[in-house]
Image (tube, rainbow, N blue to C red; front, side):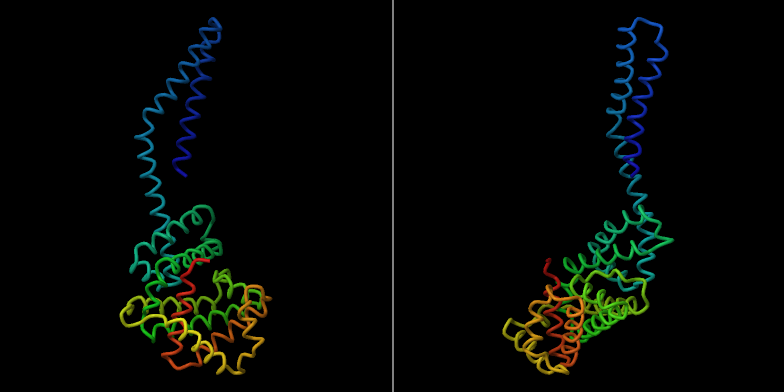
Length: 285
C-alpha cells in the first residue's frame, strides 16, 4: 500500500519535472528544448532509480509497521471473541502468522469496526488452513477427554448452524467454513471447540494417543451406525458415502445423526473416531 503510493510519487515527479522544464524553455530552439526536457526528465527518473533501494527499504519497514499496527488491533478483536484462538496462536507462531497474513489485508480494505462479517469470514478461512497445516496433526494425539469435548462442540456447532437454516447447515457440513458469525449459538460452540483444541494441543502425545488402524476404524463406525437411534439403514449408509452429491438437507441431517451416533459410544471409542475425523480434516481437499 505505502510502497505503491511512493512508487507513484516517483513517476509523478518525473513527469512534472519534464513538463515544467518544457514550459520554461518554450521560447528556445525546438530541438534544444526537446533534448533538455528529456534530459531533465531522465535526471529525475535516474535519481529516483539510484535512490530506490534506500527508499524501498524504508517503505518496506513503514509497511511492516503499518501491518503490525493493524494486526495488533485485529488480533485483539479476534482474541476478544475467541480467547482460545489467541492461546493457539501463542502456542504456535506459524498459526499467528497465517492469521496475520489472511486478516491484515481484509482489515485494511474494509471498515471492520462497522461490519465484522468480512473479518470473521476471513478468520474462518484462516482457521481452516491453520487447522489443516498446524493444529490437527498435533491435536489428533491429544487425550480422550479433550477429543470428546471437541466432538461434542462440533455437534453443537452444526446444530447451531442448522437453527439458522438447513441450507447453511449442509453447506457448513461440507465446507467447514463459518459464514454465520456473529451468532450466539455458533460463536459459543466455536469457543468450546477452540478450548477443546487447546486442551488437546497441550496433552498431545503421539506415543500414547493416535487414530486407530483402518480395520478398527471400520468396526468402530459400524458400531456407531448400528447403535444410533434410529440405526442407520443400508440406504443411509450408502447416502453417507455419496454425501457431497446430496442435497443440503440430507447433508445436514446425516452429518448431525453421525455425530450423535459417535457421541453415543463409550468415551474411549468416541475419542478414537474423533481422531479419525481430525485426521481426515487435516488432509487438504
